[in-house]
Length: 285
Image 1: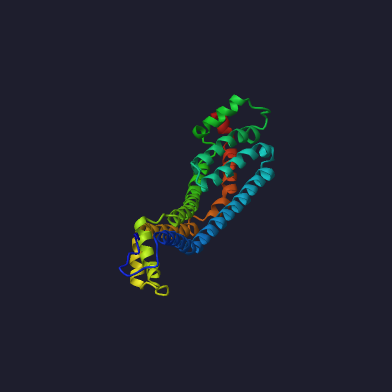
Image 2: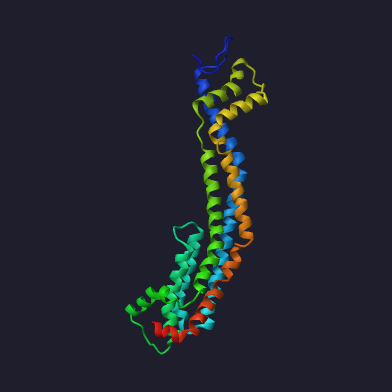
């Protein structure tokens, strides 16, 4: 009643042994693939961890530097500006991690919140208290009034280029782990497990326990077993090329550290621009 190791000669195998052999080849293949994947997965996880630690450190530094700008140069509005600054850097962090948001919306929302403070604390310091309606009106008309000139748009442009590459790299590394996990746990087909048993264990039924399959036979069986996974080869190579491109971009004109370190300077220039045009802004408002 043997289904796989059928021989004309007498055999020491039973159907139950065939089933045990099938379980063994599935276990052995899974262990082999996991062992081969371990180094690659470990390396990618290490890169993800190092990348996240690096950009979180850069974000903290940039946020602290921006907060210090308000505390030293714009003390009258420092306390109220703390929350918009925190929201800006939270939004940037979420963007890099892949959230459904944009750099433009984060930056413009920050300047929307900043305008009422600049208007009431720096341009017209005599105003003791703005009503909620008036503050909201200033927020909503900030883009029309354009108090910060081209500096707000420049900040969007500079950050978008750098943060885009960082966001793509973060997502690409995570995708690599997903691909490895999905291929690592791909189930062996019935035909594959039967072919593996014939190759590895059927000789045992004849007492030939020391004979190993030739390389060509082994490769043909494994090509059949891993055919579905092998189809990923071209796309995986393209994925690796994309990673190389992204890392080169981040090391060149889209350097994350330079972009984040320049946020405080862009905000400072924007505020100075608004102050220089204070009388005209007041008349427009």
